[in-house]
Length: 138
Ligand SMILES: [Zn+2]
Image (cartoon, rainbow, N blue to C red):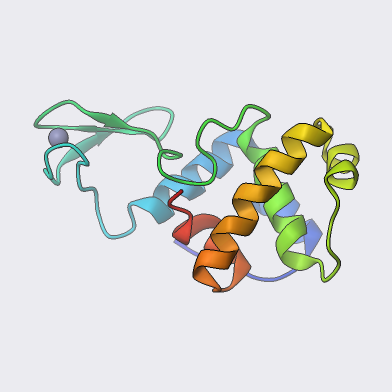
């Protein structure tokens, strides 16, 4: 599993070319050290078609987005990935209205999501691309 690094938009767009693709990436990173059930601590699971996992012992299902920045994102995970990418690769401070226009979401939606991303970056201070996928336990 390769983490995506770099600032190349074309490479990013090719790497993350569908929601499915983004979910798979998220799941691979989330469980890179193996599955551990949040409810019972069991380590064996079944992988479901949407990349969520169901505990073999208690049947608790955890989605790839649970406890991440991307949880319950309504505008689609791929868009969310792109907004993160934009935020992590620009040196300018982005406004919510600009992000809204660029990614086809409302200004309010953009503001809420950007707030989550910034909070995550603040709390970790790591490489933004790592923050985006790994340290985002909001
Ligand atoms: Zn369990």
